[in-house]
Length: 113
Length: 114
Image (tube, rainbow over all chains, first blue to last red; front, side, top):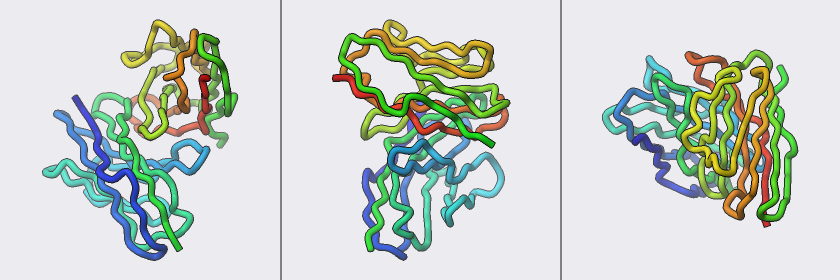
């Protein structure tokens, strides 16, 4: 069965510091990979996606992620965070022949001043 | 371009009552999804429609949950009767047909069952 593991439930970080949110997946077939952000009382917004090609993917708001097939990981990074990045971040996978998204449990990013 | 619309935004009911949620997807999106997001967890797919046909409802508790998408546009998700464990945010999403994988999410309906 396919699954997604987000290794940290909460990540506290100071403003302007770098951050990495970790995501590992398990699947016996090829996958597409996504990161979504959820602000309080709002729906999910797509940050970035990996479908094929370059394994380094750039998204909105200065975020990027790297697909590592051998380690089945898709970690999210930002070199310098802002207070406004405080939110919950979800990693998700979709399988080559279907649209169904399987989500991780989420990581709450708390940016402190 | 208008986003995915959902109503109501909040609903409080007692257990054993019934409730319905409504979703209007982005215009032209043939695929519509309903997810359940329990506090502290990631969203879980309940049902996926392609136009007005069901593609995947394997995780829908069919003894109490039902969903329909008449005319292949807006959709309704119903719970009857509700249980305490149904307290969650119900998210609707839509996308272009298979081959375009980005899903656009609505703001969700927060259901509290007391």
